Every structure is written in structure tokens, then in C-alpha cells.
Length: 401
Ligand code: PHB
View 1 (cartoon, helix red, strand yellow):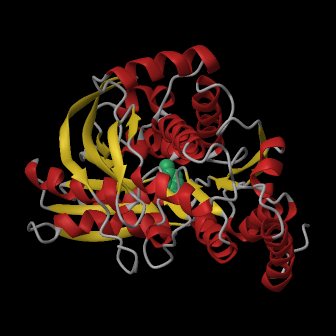
View 2: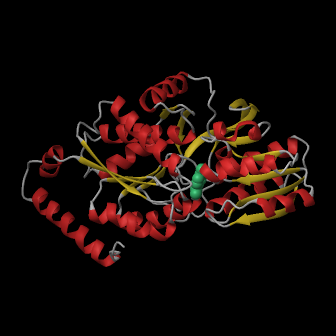
View 3: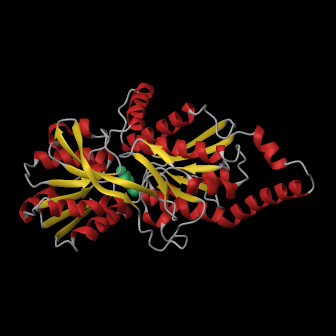
């Protein structure tokens, strides 16, 4: 097991490095920090799951991030890159040690990832204190850009509230008033449920029951029996990756005909595996495969050519993270020490994303469209319309917002 490094030792360690750089800068008119920085590689830390229920998500984020950077010449601000990846296993219990491996052990210039909101909470706790540039390329943890928000922390992905909130109105519009919710019992599940409730309940809907399943369990049978007995008008769920593939197949196999709704993570990346079982499902998400914009068409073709896999929302988020880093480091010519200017460039960034162009809120979250999608045939999901245009997370508790 990795020995965890205390925050005091981290501070002392980083303080030493900073002090040395300060002395060099003060005694020379030559921009020493910059000159030295030019020769060293920029260290990009990656904390993503490569094993377990979220493994495919981690691979798509990683490969698409590198694709974006390679398409921009394979460098950041003119400097070569050293990628240092750690398998998070989507395990919050290992997240502090894994983050420390990158932040303290490898002294990365920027850390990207993770997928799991519980891992993000532990990661942000450390990077906030160490002021390590942090670009969250999936985990929707609201706290990271809410009460834990900080100048050095950005979401290039979403907050869990964002794709969830518009879905409550969609379900009501479809005429469903009584809903059962089901989700993994950790921060992301709670936040998806909260976002859904925020539009569903004030609109006149009733949540009959919230069924919580320990992460990453995929034993759904008893819960499905309960849902069938409760007879709600509709069911709203949050599962993702391998768990989403299994849930949809189990729901179908149980013969339940109650309309199924969810965050788009229910089908993204697992639609082929779900086959016939997914037909009819409606979801809301900040991406849809068939969005009709040039960036999306090019990206889907390029990702397929590079990986021989179909792009999904995770690949989009990885790609946008790569673009974000390219833009930010270009603004300072690769000077990793110019943190304030890097952050200023990030705050001003417009990403011409496959999901549609987006900018960042004061709390450092994407202001983005949320799309309604439906599976029309096995393996075929279509864009139905914009469920909410330019939606910003409320960023509750963030002092910067
Ligand atoms: C999360 O834990 O924030 C999370 C995980 C997987 C997803 C979306 C959100 O697909």
C-alpha cells in the first residue's frame, strides 16, 4: 500500500521548491524560471479508472485528451509533455494516496480526471491546498466547484446537477406525475436525484420512493421487483459504465414496461451492449452523438480513426480537456510558473466542442446546453431537442461565483 504523505510534509516540500525559484528570480534579470521551464517537459497527471465498472470511461477520456493535444502538435505551449497516469480504480478509499502519488510524488504541473465524484472530493481537498492546477474531466461532484471551489479548480465536464435538472420537466411534459428513482448511493447519485427533484417536484410531480444501491453493486433484481409493485408512471435512474449496461438489460429482462428515464450516462458508451433492451429510453445530457455541428462530425471521425471505437460523452470531455490545456498553455508560452495567467486564460476560454461551443461560469463550470435524446432502435440513439439552453450550475457555496 502507498504510504500517505501528510499535508505538512507536502507543504514543506512544495514550499522549498517555491522558495528556491523565488531566490533565482530575484537575483537575476534573466527570466530563469521560464528558461528552465522551457527545457523540462510539462507533467500532465491523469487520475482515471482503468479497471472496474468505469474502466471504459477512463480509456475514452484519456485517448481523446491525447488526441486533441496531438492534433495541436503534441505539445503544450511549445513544450514536450510527460503524461503520468494512475489507475484510480474509481475507489474513493484510495483517492488520497493516488492523488498524492501525482501531486507530491511526481510533482505534476496539472492533474486531470477523475470519473467518480468520491475520488474527486479527495483529489480536490489536496489540490486546493497545494494549488495544483486541476481540470476535472468527468466527475460531476458539485462541491468541487461549489463549496470547495478555488481559482485552480475547473470542470471541463459538467456538474451532476446539470444533466439531471432538465429531466424532471421532460418527465412531467410526457405526462408522468409519480416517479420512482434509483441510483448508486454516493455523492453523484444524491446529486442526480437532487437535480431531478429541483424541477420535478415544483412542477407538480411526486417522488414515490428513492432506491439506493451501494456502489459499484449491480444486484438489481430485488429492487426491480419492488418497482414493478409500486407501479410508478416513470422511473428515473443514475447508473453509468458497466453498471448502466447491466441495469438496462435487467430492467428489460424483468418485463417492466414502465417508461425509463435517466441521465445520458445510462446509455452513453454502453448502447451497443444494451441492444434491444434500451429501446425507448429517454435521457438528458450535455452531448448527443448526432449533434449537427462541424466540430462533432470531425471529432467522431477522428476518434474512430485513432482508436477504432465510437466516441461518446466521455471521449468528448477528454477531447475538450485536451483543447482546454492547449489553449491555456499557449497563452503563457508553456510557462508553468505563470499560474495566474494560466487561470485567467482558462476563465476566458471558449471551447469549440463537439457538444457545441461553451464558456465557463465564475465558479469554473461549463455553461452548456443539455440535450434530450431517445433510443429509437437497438444501438441507435437520436437527438430530440434542446432540453435546456446554456445551463449554468448554481454553484451553491462557491465564494467566487
Ligand atoms: C460521478 O461519480 O460523478 C460520475 C460517474 C460516472 C458518470 C457520471 C458521473 O458517468
